[in-house]
Length: 324
Image (cartoon, rainbow, N blue to C red):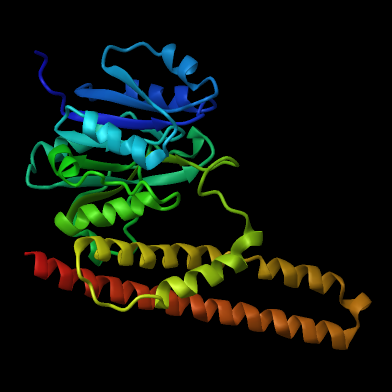
């Protein structure tokens, strides 16, 4: 019987023919070779599997399921894993060749740490991935106490036994931010994470990306964020409720950050070009209205972020004390 690998790498694949070869190649080029690769084919209907079949490696195996969503695919990957740690990678993202080496060096010397993450750099191609920056220190910190600590699905590495004990780790009824919900569920039971600012993962955003959003829809997201923030009382009855509430706070922060990108400044530039056509009075009225909206959005974003950050930390500290 073959010894279990240190890492089990889980890649969920659904119609990813454009980037899947590059993604898997970044795994094959890892300097650390103590891994297995589990590709979960989530009912792809394009040429993804043909592209994958070109990349032959005895450490890679494919698990095919009917199309069930990325959360189900990741949960199946966790269930199939034989490694000590599970590393996740999305089907269009790319790892630096030292990604697993850094993680292995730290986790093999700190077996009490239940999970690890590095930083990602966002871009459309591998030229955005900075490979020349010196590695930064790895620090252990409470996940919930650091609102700016955004763990991504291609940077996170979890201890396999812990992840399997929490199955289904990824909520299969959510189509957006399901990874945040999973991290919060995991962190309730394992609050300390080893985190490094080293950017060794390319998080690819492109037109087909789930998280690529247009500015035009930002106003509707504002209405989405407000009820999520004030909808529920701060009484936590279970870990599941804590997870859901934390997800609401994270979602609120996510939308408020995107709302802040509303192109109001561009509106003002366009308005200035039409000053003569509009006349002084009309221009002044419209300009004042836009500046007022801009200021209100800025204030609202700040209040949402401060409030959600404060409350999420208080709730999770209280709930963690109850668990302990």
